[in-house]
Amino acid sequence: LSTETDPNVDVQFQEHGYLFLASTESGAKQLKENYGVQCKAGCEDIHLLSPTELKEMFPWMYNDDVLLGSFGSKGEGWFDPWALLKGLKDKNIEMGVKYV
Image (cartoon, rainbow, N blue to C red):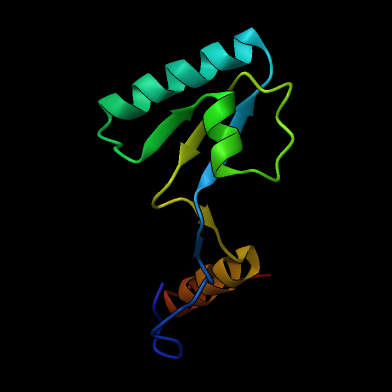
C-alpha cells in the first residue's frame, strides 16, 4: 500500500489474538473442524480451549454456557478499517484509477 506521498501506510494493526466461542454442540463441532483445516494449512498458533482453560486465560469473561473456544494467539487482531480504505484508495489513484 505504500505510495509516493505515504510510503508507510499505518493501519494501526493491534495483535491481541482473536477468540471464537461455541455455546452449542454444533458450534463446538464447527470450531473443531475449522481447527483441523487450520492445522493442515500450517497454522501453529491456533488453540482449542476448554471452559476451564478459557477461565484461566480470561478470568473476567462469563463462560458458564461456553463449550469450547478457539484462540488465535499470533498474527490475529484488528486494525483501523478507515486507514486501510484510505490507503487502498490512495494507491488506486496513484495507479491511475479515477473515482466518480
